[in-house]
Length: 467
Image 1 (cartoon, helix red, strand yellow):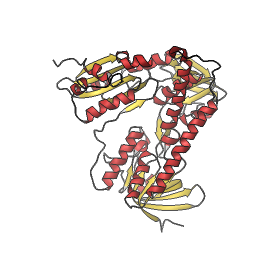
Image 2: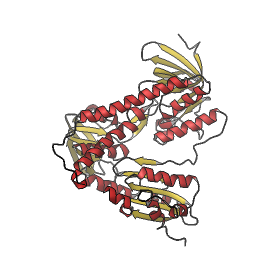
Image 3: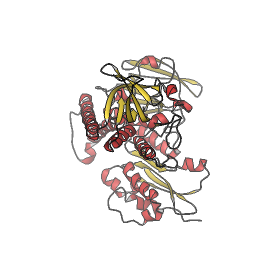
Image 4: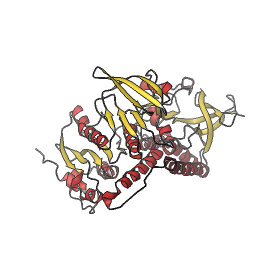
């Protein structure tokens, strides 16, 4: 058995098997390096197990339910319709099992070692692992990468922790339809799951502490999301400050708060917290490794993702990177290259994102809010989604597209879409931005008809002329 005095030596030790960490281990192992990944529970990280992919699986089931209930609109009759949440959950579980099997196979084929247990620093670049099967091991790496992720934040509101609220993890494991689901938080997770459970048949109420949903985005996006919620029968209550919670989620729960100086009360059967994330950086023995924390408990890193300890790196949510799997994958590429002696940084990289409501909300580059805050002048082009003829064939005309173009050049500064296939359309604009193409390249492109991408010709044809 390895000890602190005789640790097992590795070229790379990764704590956490999430997106960036697993790819680092697989890549270096294939190069002949000795690499190990320490993982407590979720092989492959949160994305394939409890977050991105499972939630999109459930959301797609809800989309199918929505289309089925709309079937008469498409000339299809129906009767005796009901939602089997057990079957919905089983479809999701099967996908997760298949994904975990793929990850285990990747570890085997790459030669990277997967160590199941809980790791903590006991010395610089040295981790002690309490193995899930019993016993301990001590691993020391020439390079150590922290990839511990984040978890749902449960605020210290009186009665909230005691109410045993759902997080996204438990919500995705429900085998029944909540009678009335109260959701604390009107951001990505709250909005996606609100729509999904409403489509399954739950009454749903969103409680948002800010003045509007997705409050950091442009007002037209917030208004569009709120209209979507109300049209689907989702209650939206903004400017609510929580005071206390009574009862237990899963039976009866009452949320008491204050809005505009008056008491606010919402009662339901289930409570879901979706009001933010916090890093999983506690109990890691960081002080023994010389790793310092930054604001809000994130691991302090520089633009190369190096921590304050030599040979120790941090990636993904735990290091304060934008909380997206694709960003953690880019973190992997940055650390991979820097370990190899190159100089790659996070500075100035693009951060695309997509909220998987139906329709989707996607953005790349500057929003109007950001451009105004930074004093960046722009030309605005904006069209309704219904101007794209493909939406008419799908009966999905809700939403809009808009683009920001520089006033003194034809550079695309940003693109926002709220509409069907928004994430896919955004990718086309992102590639143009990466290539430094002027907006006229998209305006004058010959794009297939009828597709959603064809709408970019319409959109960029409305860019005002330079003044």
